[in-house]
Image (cartoon, rainbow, N blue to C red; front, side, top):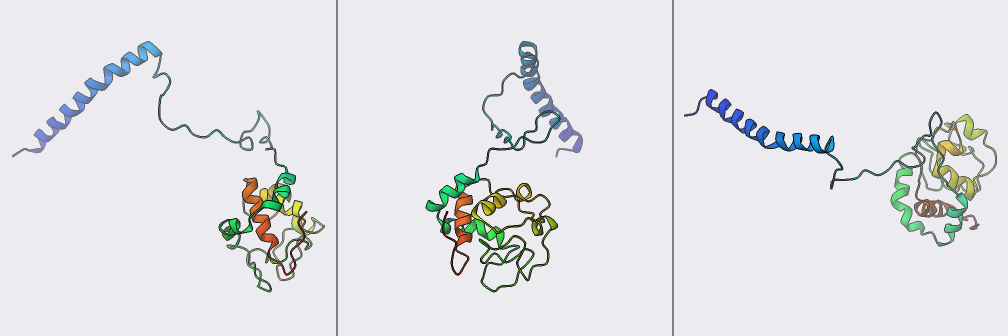
Length: 185
């Protein structure tokens, strides 16, 4: 029968053997390359986006986003492709005609409706209420791309949709939430 002292000696022997195998290779690498050199293989992490990269002493660099490209894509957008993306909206918004607003306003008929005007929703930010004008395609695309950039001070916590194709499909889907959908631009 092996007692605990014998098990300790066996574990120590295994660790010493591993040290004897690994240590010389590590020391040789350090002597020849001043480190391990270039790592071959492995997984390369994606580079930060232009939005996340901040120039020295400044705010993050703005990414080139052109709402006109998304609006041009509306003619070929597929609203049915946006049903899974729109499920994210349903956590805070209702989308049926006559349904009560939730944490956010009901999105039925939002295109063409004045900003911050859903009658049963009282939680609009001052920024949204003072925006003025109606929800146009350009406004909706810009807002859904980056809500806090389009209307600084908005209470909407959604980060936005960065993919132009997904965004076009989403806006095309929201367009269908109406008795008489707005004509495409």
